[in-house]
Image 1 (spheres, rainbow, N blue to C red):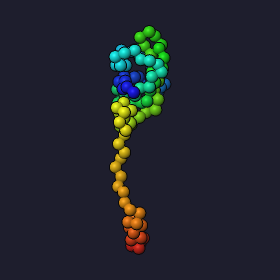
Image 2: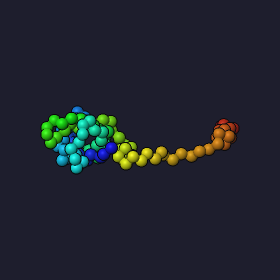
Image 3: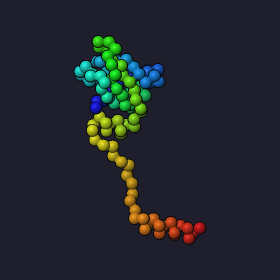
Image 4: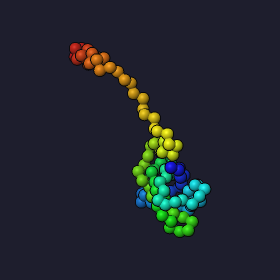
Length: 107
């Protein structure tokens, strides 16, 4: 999956669709609809799942915006590396139960 950096208007983001010239996609090639991409909207600095849908003109295509993505998820889609899970602390159940009993005894 490739990253597409584009400037979109507020209306285009609101309608979840924009007509974009092939050169503005920055792919270095003519896209092959329907092609999944990650859209980085540069005005808002937000990421969206997207689809290059169809050719509206010989040198332009319709870009459809899907759901907004957190930056880490967007970059994971582009690089193919999974999103790192937030760190968590593991603790034995017996220790948790002991701590709860201790807290209840104080109250």
